[in-house]
Image (tube, rainbow, N blue to C red; front, side, top):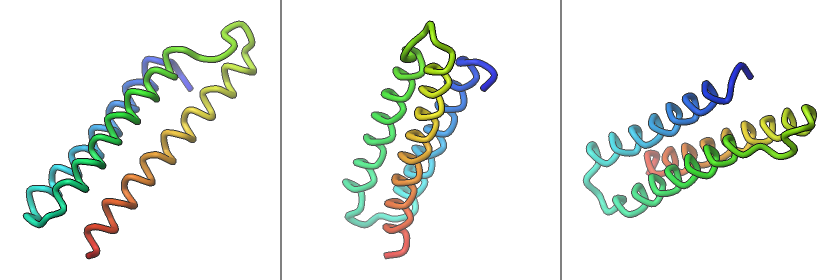
Length: 95
């Protein structure tokens, strides 16, 4: 990880990509899936906010090992959250 600033920019970018994909899905399909898509968008915003908050406040600021461990877990949690959101979106697309 180069810097926390770059990490936060990447988090923002990936979250905005997910939200953009959800909005594209809303525009192409006019079914009753609107509420489910909006719930995915709400979860994406919540994920974005919590991950950014965790990125700004690492555990054990004085211990380098704890900080590295914190950011590794943060990245894994973020990717897991994005993967879950995209899998929900993909499941709706298949129906």
